[in-house]
Length: 292
Image (tube, rainbow, N blue to C red; front, top):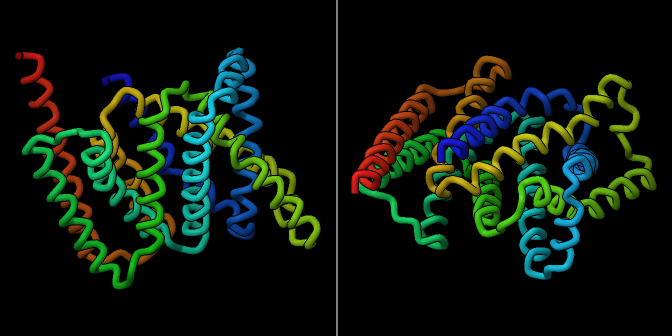
């Protein structure tokens, strides 16, 4: 559990600062950025698996139809999440991306109760209720249907559920997921080249090198997340996730200068209250379990 918590914190800090990285490519369409993200993630993970000498595990994955189907689902879900996130950041919706990842822990708890039969205690349910009220306040104040936020929450929530269901090493699992969407990314490269619409390949050399590093930037937090997901309950993992959107919200206010209302700040305070309540209830529950 402690090891899982450390991995989760590292992953969510990395994700929290990612808008700073994607903002470097404002002039590149989101779909093209996504295709490079997939290709270079596959390359990086291929090198990592080779160094780890895990190709035997890849052969076992290829021989399992159920694993291939599960990894296909998780690969498509994370690719969809990447696409929405990149588009939102580069089109001035960092606040809404933050809202999406605030929604995600609530969805995680719902998915955990329905599909994994996890049972939150009273204190945890109270935290969920406080967080739900906060998200409702934020959504109403936002003034329009937050489709970006909901899409991010649903896609990443289902991805987290899929990772809980797949008993697979983090490196091998991520390489398999990127392999699933690799043909789509390469096909998109071919389409862009044929239509004369490539943007990334005309970037200045330093910026193109930064784009090549998207494989590392993408893979590292996912590796930490996969290790955390294997060691923590889905509902607890979801609440640790508040680290990421909090960093995004702060970036949107102080770096990207997006408008933030006082009501949004109240919602932010409520969410952190929920996090404190949830953490306290979880610690007490763990102590009681050890005592018995």
